[in-house]
Length: 266
Image (spheres, rainbow, N blue to C red):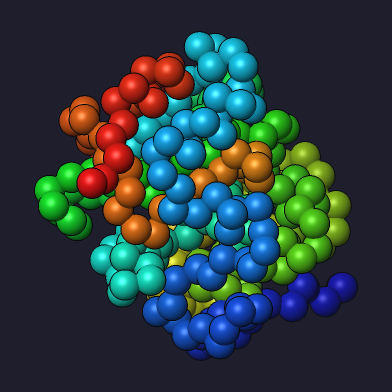
């Protein structure tokens, strides 16, 4: 009988492998220096809107799904807002949504990735009673049907950064063997489990990481989403807020309508 794939021991805890600083289990994600995403950090509303208009001529055809993030907390001066969950994920300088909003990602309007944008806002309990925009991405096609497809598509440097066995907030689950096929792509046993201490495996029997891989709703599986690197944005400081009431569930508007309801902080 062949040997089973190597896996972390049950008692093993994760140690983050971060290229920019030695991270411990409570550290947030780090941005890659000199990346397109770094250049798109903490932009003003005017610069953000101009960049979208210059790159999206038919903005009326684009849909924005907006929602509240439960994993963003208050940080320090240089990172006023900190992401302590695995999604949205910006390790490796690439924004991705693979371990949250599972149900939303089963919808046909989202699964295609066609003219689609995702925006995440902070809870209004974090600062001044307002929802602040934390991230925005124009989804890049193709979308990925499984974590195996996602893993294979990532450049090696990005894959290493997002690897859930290397970073406690990693959102790329490593296949236990090369070239998973058919239904094996959707079975958690086909992947190397993230070590204990990962955001979706805080205890040996925590099922969240398995649900990420095996989730279905109405017979549909959630696709994995990646943002266009040139049209993905992050805000670690309170720059842009919104005028509408938000909820934990996602809301859908056109891109021009979305932009018209944003306000720049004084």
